[in-house]
Length: 324
Image 1: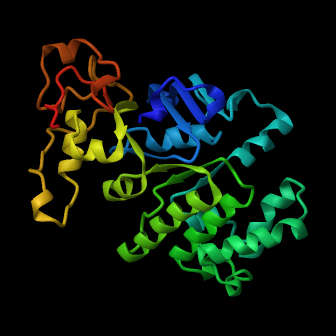
Image 2: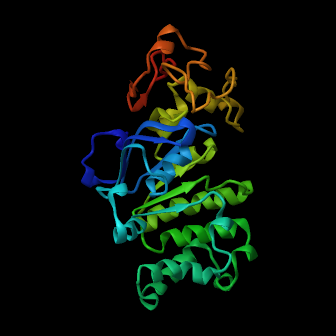
Image 3: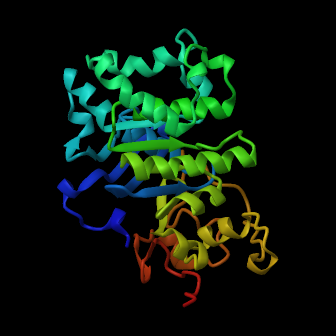
């Protein structure tokens, strides 16, 4: 329980970010002291509105966004202390599945060439590794007839499968998926989620899934972190957090999520105003300008992440009442 935010030994973790801060030009603070730990064979979800810092956190984990403060470790090594040839080690530890799979695949290469390229870069013999890749393609439902096509010649769902296959070629310990079901039909979304779950079971990587789709996160993850304006505001085991959210922001997000079963629907909570600018975040609790439970203390003090209920962490002075 809460493996991703406990004081686990660094050697037991696939990845860790500690007090992570990232600022962009113009004083925009994308991340403000985020801590997250990812143990082996765990699927963790990150949710929040646009501008909450989800994708920035994902890019920092794979070495694409240098922090202005804090630490990013993979397999116990500081990602941003790696130099020169050591950077190739990083790509064997972590791979990313991007939100737009077609644009993330080079249009100049066939699917076969795209799958072989990581082996070439790492000077791994194709003949030795291709039987393993061929078996993996069968698991992922990628037909051999697609291998000599180009990315623009396959469907969006097929492109997602190819992106997953390419991420698995080097057998990474962590795969980061940014909005993995965006733009797909609901039926294809279900197939892809089943596929990601099977990938974890068969090949053993940990998964970090970034999404605004709460139904996706609830179905596929073990634990989930909720972000607001660059901060982690709640963290917990997925089912517990969805059933009994403690932070007012989490409660509002879940209340707005469509639910088919009328017996499980919540009254929709409409938050006042817009998410503030990360260039000039509010004082105290960053959520107080929209929070229906905010009081004077919330405007003056910033709450730290602490245990709000068994198995749930949150940053709130006046949390939603706990339901046993």
